[in-house]
Structure formats: structure tokens, C-alpha cells
Image 1 (cartoon, rainbow, N blue to C red):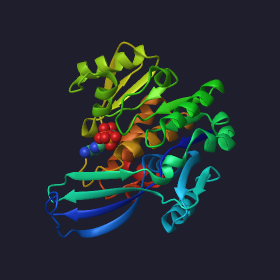
Image 2: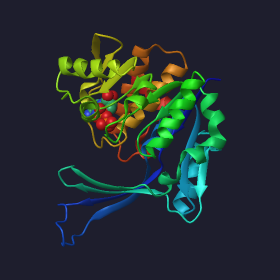
Image 3: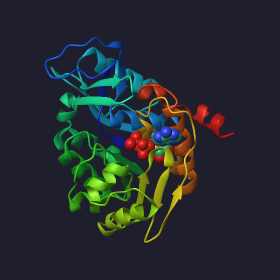
Image 4: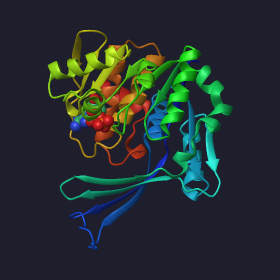
Length: 303
Ligand code: ADP
């Protein structure tokens, strides 16, 4: 069976609802405290596996109770966890998230075990990249590890997919190793300097990324769908209209689902429609991995 290898982050999301964000020096009461499984790498691996892909995950978790539990959860989701390393005397990565009454987020991320995912730690799992059909990367682990993984993949003919999130500028060397890139509007602007606000500006941003050597550019546009460009012209592929409750992990679900579709030989356009459906279901539920749908849910939604 065809293989997807995801290399990326694992986080425990500590979420608390607040009426207003506390100001410096102020103490406020929050409510509805939850610890939710998150991290972009983990979310994308879980999404791809729940949606039918054969997934290897390369990541680092801490030797705390969350790290141990989440590794088991990945296994229960059908993910090969041989590459999920347990770092001694280190906490699992965390995100401290406050959600205000108006739905705004304030987020502080601490890499912790994710920072231990160095190129040297990946070497024993290199064959999982070389033998995969697709390697999926994001930007929540050390950038030198991401570059090393992309180099290994390119040398062995593995397709490199980069979800360049959270937003940051990247070297031309890394971008030249990427086959498919999936920024949202903000990430596309940081990578290209072009503000994406309509179809024309989306294509201009895509052209800059094509100029760096990337064949397929997919800019996600939230509730407006995606802009797909495979050359000098592109097209918008609309998403589904749903009542959004919490958009956390929408992009992660989109990426995992897109590759699950491609790996079972759906066309790129059909994989995007499948990914839109999965991401629409995610925004209808709360949290990150808690809201990522299973294949049956997506098939029922599409029927
Ligand atoms: P990110 O979460 O990385 O910022 P986007 O917000 O662009 O990514 O969303 C990624 C995908 O999730 C979209 O292309 C779409 O399929 C889906 N999506 C996001 N927001 C909504 C929404 N409000 N309604 C329906 N689908 C959505």
C-alpha cells in the first residue's frame, strides 16, 4: 500500500475560555478549561490516517503523561508510531490558548520536545522518508530538520508537500525542494510579499512560488475554498458552506485529507473537494484532533 510520512510537531493545547483577555498585571477568571491534542504535525497525521492513508509519523514527545497517552492515541488512529520518539526529562510541546467571548484567540506556543527533533534524531528513521510516496512537512519543528527531510525525500524521489505554517520566511533552497505547497493567505503573503485578497493576487503570489521551483501551489482561503495553480493560470475551487464553530485544525485537516485522496489515486481536483468536505466537518466541531472527522463521516457528508 502507498505510504505517507508526516514529520512534525505534537502539542498539548491548554484551552481556556475568557470573557476578555487579561491585561499585563491583571488576573481574571477563565472557564471551560480543556487539554486537547494538537500540534500541526500530529493533526495532519491523524487527519490523513482517519481518512484512509497509510501513515508513518516522525515526531518527538516528552516523557510526561500527555506524551505517553498521545503516542498510544496515534496508534489507535492507525498511525505507525515507530518514529514518534520519547524525550527523557522533557515536557511534550504545549500551546496555551485563550479564547475570548467574541471568538478571538490568543496563543503562546512552547516547543519543548518538538525542539529535540534534530536532523540527528531523524537519521534512524530516514528509510521512512525514502520509502514513502509523499512526505508532508510543516514549520513547528527545527528548520534544519525540515530541510534535511526534504533533501532526503528529493534524493529518493518522494514527493515533498510543505504546509508552511506557522508563517515564516523560507530559504530558496528549501522552497526548491518542494513539489506541492499549501499556504493560507497570510502565509502566502509572508512567502511572496504579495497580499492575497482576490483571485488575481492569489495567482500573482502563486507565480512567485512557481518561480522558486514549486510545481503545484494551493493557497487555502478559509470559507472561500482554495486557489489552485499549476502554472501561469489557476482556478478557485469553492469549499462547503457550513456553520463554523471553531476553525482550529481546518488547514491541518485539509492537508491530511488532500494527501489521503491523492494516495488513493483521486485526481488533484477531486482530492481538493474531499479535503474541503473533511475540513468543513472539522470547523463544525471544537478543538483540534477532537474535531477531525473519520472517513465514514466525510462519505456521509458528501452523499
Ligand atoms: P488555516 O486553518 O491553515 O488558516 P484556512 O482557514 O485557509 O486554513 O482553511 C483551510 C480549509 O478549511 C479551507 O480551504 C476550507 O476547505 C476549510 N475551511 C476553513 N474555514 C471554513 C469555513 N468557515 N467554512 C467551511 N470550510 C472552511
